[in-house]
Image (cartoon, rainbow, N blue to C red; front, side):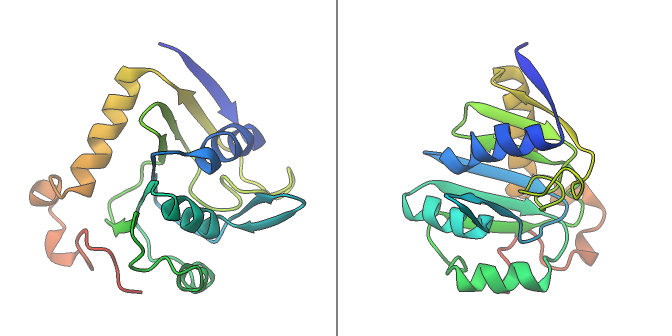
Length: 177
């Protein structure tokens, strides 16, 4: 198995900058929590949601699977970026999602502790970020396992046995924020 152990700012550099922002076909993300994280853009920073908008405009299939209702700032930027109802961009919410992963172009898999937040994966200084750890791999067995769980949740295969379906606020529908 080929993998690289990443910690803290390495996750931002190697997962976000080197892979997520350069996705060509697909970018699938699972995160328990979402915040309007920012990433480098030239000599400044911009919301990752604007990156998602640009990627989806190029035909990249961007999917975000998350558990919690995003904060106000995230929702404002989501609307402002024109992502609600945009082709090639979909968000689905499942309150039981706690795994964190990034799947890029069907070849690169990141599996680790950080949420899709500034303190987890974003452009924060060393003194303002969480202590995070994860594995970056191009191993097909690892990718298949992560992809299987992602798709089982995404398509609703987990709903029947979930036990929380009756209390699920918006079962696997793209929320209309």
